[in-house]
Image (cartoon, rainbow, N blue to C red; front, side, top):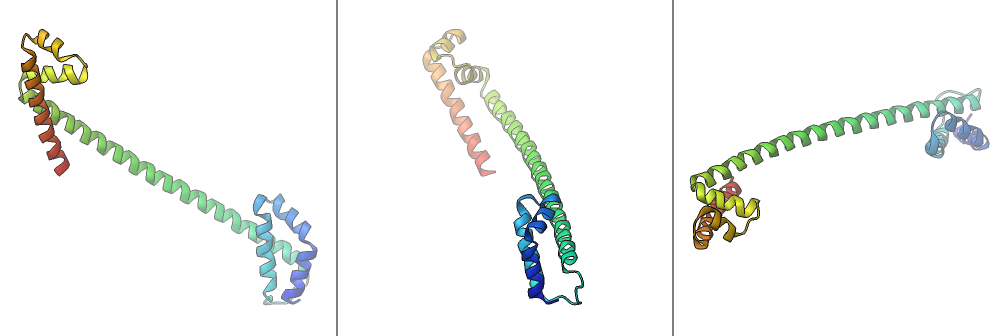
Length: 167
C-alpha cells in the first residue's frame, strides 16, 4: 500500500480516528493528532501494510502515547521551574530580610551615636508623628533645639544612605 492510498483510508476513516483519539484523552488536540497521522500516512511505509485501518489506529495510539509523554514532560519541567524559582525567591527574600535587619541596626546605631535627645526627637517626630512643639515641651527644650536635633539626624541618615548606596 502506498502513502497516498493510506492517506485515502485515513480520510475515509477520519470520524472514527477522531473519536478514537478523543476517547483516549486527546481533547482539543484530536484534530492536530489526526493531521500528524495524515502526514505520517503520506510517507511510504518501509514494509507492505496488510491491514491499513489497523495500522492507522496503531499509529494513532502511538501518537497518543507521545502526547501523554510530552504533557508529562511539560508538567515536570513546569513543576521543576516553579520549584527553582520559588527556592530562588525564598533565598532572595531571606537575603533581603537579612540586609534590611542589618540596615535597621545601622540606622539605630547612627541615631544612638547622636545622643538620646536626638534619637528620641527623631523617633517621636518621624515614627510617632508628634509635632515638634510637643516634642520640645516633653523634652524641656526649645523648638529650635528640636529642629537642630532633627537636622542632625537627617544629615547622619543621609550619609548612611550614601554608604548603603555605594555598597
